[in-house]
Length: 585
Image: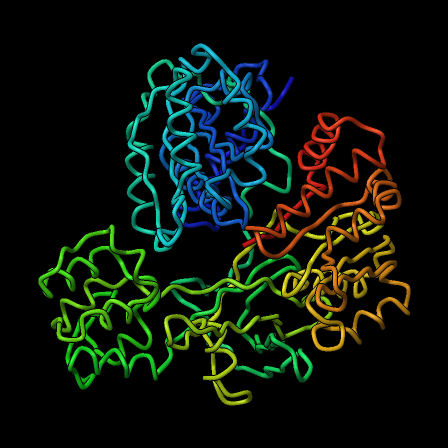
């Protein structure tokens, strides 16, 4: 006989919200296998807790975190939630569900995240209305600076409807500042589900959730995107040699007694400030001295200069700002002219005679967002610190020098040993070294993509993991751009780094990249995969990650003696087994 779900009593040392969530979570947990016995009358298992499946499609962990938050709220409101990575379900299982929330980001050119691709393909190949009994709602996560904003969410929403599912709340497409939209969507969705005829959670057969995707209750520091920790900058060292066309910096921040906890594979959010020279140029074009009072994004009042330095995004201009300025200048405003303006200052430079009032100007700006960087340290090896590997962005456009907001903030505008930087940890549970230290790792990380793999290697070294490690690294020139060269060669001499294959594209006439090194070593690479190796990629999503993925398919096809279709199936199985993970941007 299987036991009914345990119950957290009022005398337990939890707040009412914590008790409500824990009771919902436990009911959902115990409902994952059919209950053969009838629970005692009045027990929690006898109550009608409505099963709810929450699917997340996530490349960096944001959607996963929101899925867990949704589960917590659902548990308070009479649901027994089950959080699933999209790779853990399929069409037959979905056809048996009654209530579904989908939370997904978009990757690359409007593509689904890696963990959502298999399910998306299955939905795309299905016909008829197999989801006729399903009620659902979709939340998309994205960035309006990209053309394919929330495309994956739009596609899932339309496809679920086409397969017969009933939309209970309109899809929301969240920009980088997603908090309010997400909260409203979740409230509306949970309130809109029709629970009539729902089986009690204690009697529902709900699919199991592997331990690594269950909602966790970690020891929290209290610091977050909205409340970043002010960390002391310890070091900011240039990694490139003299004569390099690049500027990559090794940044060290002190965690001190913050309580911030991270793992190898996580990202760090950094709260930047805009360039003071750029702000001064904009003030000049507006005809302002910077002391004018304007609203900050949080509703408070501040000076225009301070607002432009610390609160508003001066990058890609919004359609609203373009329309305001061009209309005031007597031109035809609108989104169609946005292609001519790469930054906010370009709009003002195009109409220097137009002096938009300060309050009107800031209302057309977006909030300045934190930037995420892959962490390049391990807490096991670098206690009390967190390290970043930051590529500084500088270029000329239309006769004007341009700077990356956060990269030049860290390189030019903060002082080691004096300045403090706002930070928070962004968890990426889908990108971790193998939990089994005996498993081999293959890591492909050209340029700043080496960041998490430096963390992985130091983590394995500190923990005494004995699995083999193979790194593919590339950049422009070995003499000036071999990032962390001494460290890597030391790790190789120690035997921790089993293989180190490099590709420096400008050191010979023919350009050679990491994907070429993979194919040159196809037989051994495939042998590692056959021995259970985990395959990781970090770096540029638009070209490098796609080229590496194509090379991996060719390696499997050629070295494994497979057809193209069989190679695709093999790679898909690596992803399903969580042995192929990407941290791409």
